[in-house]
Amino acid sequence: MNRWQELTGGTSGDEYAARFAALARSGKDVHGEARFCSALVPVGARVLDAGCGTGRVAIRLAELGYDCVGIDLDASMLDVARAQAPELTWVRTDLAAFDPALLGIAADFDLVVAAGNVFPLLAAGTEAAVTARLAAALRLGGLLVAGFGLDAAHLPVPPGLTVEQYDGYCAAAGLTRVGRFATWDGDAYEGGGYAVSVHRAGT
Image 1 (cartoon, rainbow, N blue to C red):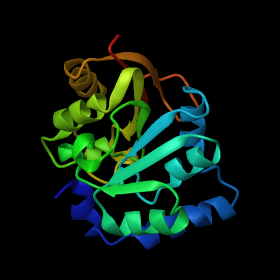
Image 2 (cartoon, rainbow, N blue to C red; image 1 turned 60 degrees about the vertical axis):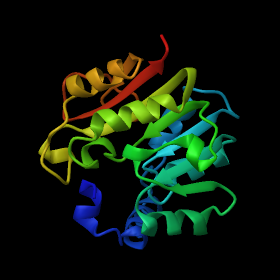
Image 3 (spheres, rainbow, N blue to C red; image 1 turned 120 degrees about the horizontal axis):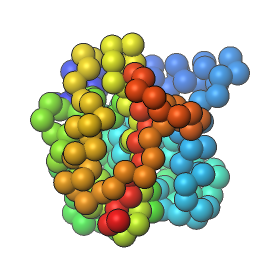
Image 4 (tube, rainbow, N blue to C red; image 1 turned 90 degrees about the vertical axis):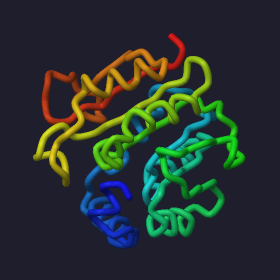
């Protein structure tokens, strides 16, 4: 069981979707992650939304012309994603055991995105394994993009993962950091409580 399941019991899909729908109705931009990713790879690129939740990021990227697959362990979140976009591929799997070949998914993604505090909400001790498995799903030169909180103000759980640790996991998986930002709008990272990191495979 990962930290997200411990927090929610794996039954929060409808509630989570409703919260973002309300934010959208209020005029808040809820597509920063998709916009950020779309600036990194061309339209038509294959994108894996790892820890996709209700599919907000993948669905928006698909609307923009990307070939998207979403994976998550929370069945209630995937139920919402499938209802909203049944034409997309949604797969229930533990990121720590993610094996594209076993799931019939080609491991040649141009970009893998892990938004929404995916890494801090993993089961403790699986961060390195998840990084390696997501890296293995990338084509040579593909990008892993992860945004997550680093302090209590940006996390629903006690802070644990640092950017230095994450960089180490990425390096061990054959990834090189090519960018780090403070927000999904691309603001410069200067050591704050949230970071969006971009790493490239095979360089």
